[in-house]
Image 1 (tube, rainbow, N blue to C red):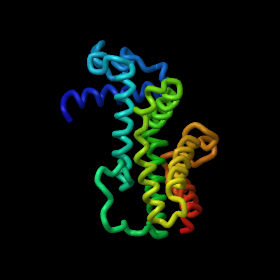
Image 2 (cartoon, rainbow, N blue to C red; image 1 turned 90 degrees about the vertical axis):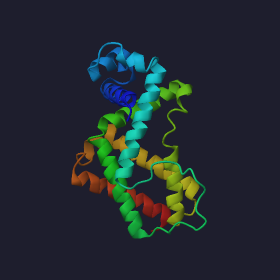
Image 3 (tube, rainbow, N blue to C red; image 1 turned 30 degrees about the horizontal axis):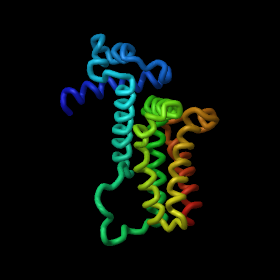
Length: 213
């Protein structure tokens, strides 16, 4: 990273923690300066407007999410090249077991060590409901839907386009339920083997229903 990129990363990581603690109302340039322990005015020097700050936060969230997905060999981005001339290998039941386990690992991470990021992500999404100009900035999950459709096609799903979107929505809902819904009270504690096993079972049940595998 360049010196500027490093500084922006520091500032946006501090902003993520602020949003997680106090919601979008807590996000000010001055508050980011304080949380990042940098001289007053630093954040506004790098990110002059509140929208620029929010855009940088969303970019940082997407960057760190991609790193988590890559760590577990899960898809991260939209493909930029045309598909290969030969079809991708078909996924079997064992592949889907591994996929469910990998998704569960990422979800458990986002519920434990990445909890602040998850809270900040949902806060930014809610902000976009009232500020339509932010919606295009917050579309960094679109690639996951494309990848989900491809995976379900390879697993034999009957309607992979629709079911891929449903799969992503289910996983996102599972995360939200464990983070802020009733699941937060009843599910195994995040960061535990029991949590990962429970999440994996939930994801595998959906994959089985969608593909028959």
